[in-house]
Image (cartoon, rainbow, N blue to C red; front, top):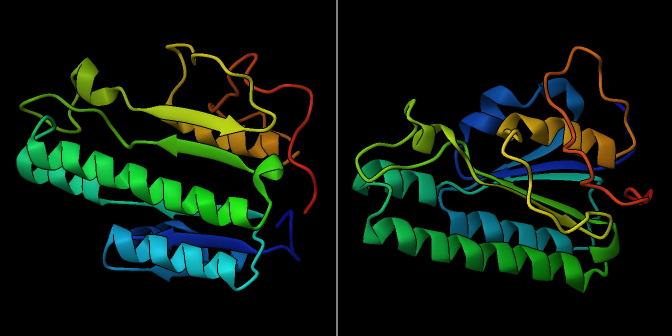
Amino acid sequence: SYFPNDKLVSFCHWSNINKGIIENDLHVHKVNRLSDALVTAAIVSYFRRGNLPKLMFVQLDNVDHQAHSHGGFSDEYYEAIEKADTFLGDIYDAIDDRELMDNSLFIVVADHGETADGHGGKTPEESTAVLAVAGHSVNKMILPETTHNRDVAAIALYALGIEIPDYFVSTVPEGLFGESRLKAV
C-alpha cells in the first residue's frame, strides 16, 4: 500500500463492491448500508467524528436501481438523480465543515448510460457514462469525448502523486490538472 498509515474508506449501498471488489489486504475501512440515505448519513457521521481519510470511495445505487426498474427517462429515475445530488451536497458539506475542500478531489462517475428503452447495453447512449471531476487543482473544462469511466483510476493516482503504471489503459485527460496536486494530509 502506498499509504500504510493513512485511512482508506469505502461507503457503499451495493455491498458487492466492499465484499468482492475492494481487496481485503489493503486495510480499507468498509461500510455497507441498505440505502443511499444511510450511506450518506454514515459518511457525515464519519467526518463529524473527526476522521480524515486519505482516500474515500462512495457508491450510491438508487439512480441505477431506478433506471433498471423504471427506465432511464422515467419520473423515478429523475427523482433519484435529484436525491443523489442532495446526498452529494451533504457529503460535500461534511468535508467542507472539516475545512478539507482545498485538498479534496471529487470524481463522480456513472457505470453506464441510458436510453428510454435500455440501460447498460451496447448502444452509444448506453455505453456513454457521466464523468465529472472537481477540486482545487482541477481546471474547469469539458472532458474530451475520448475520456472513459476507466480513466478514474489514472486520475486518482495522478492526484495522489502515484506513478501511473505503464500497463494502464486508463489515462489522465490532457489539461485536467493545474500545477498542484493533493497535499499530504
